[in-house]
Image (cartoon, one colour):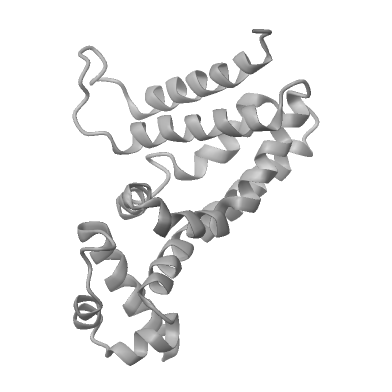
Length: 201
């Protein structure tokens, strides 16, 4: 019964957070949509912020697990790791075509919320994961400082979010690109940008 109640609350909160944002979603709206009282939300999640964090965690836990599995397989493979392979292991689980539209919208919403709200949540969800990938990139780019790799990975994430969530394409000539072509272009762009760090300035 508790699992059913928690899932109803999470389902309701997720849809409302996606549509109206954190500030625009009231606890009353969540309770009405989930068919529960405020005490149930406080019991299971402690607060509205706790509920938002739980909403994010429910969706991202499996993605992060997939990332780590892909990275481990890559590092243990006979061919070894490469910049392209590491980036693909990080981005593939959340690229369009691999995730449901609701998850893509939630990811977009997370990155649109104030840093004061999402910063601690993102650090808890992704801090260790990102450090693992940065360490892997350091292994294949031993002469590049960790800070530079971290910054480039962050910029690559921004490019990926643009591909996932952008509205109508501004530039002509690329609207007919297939999903696979867009993904190939994305990975080529990000990996080449990462490799530029190895070029002496």
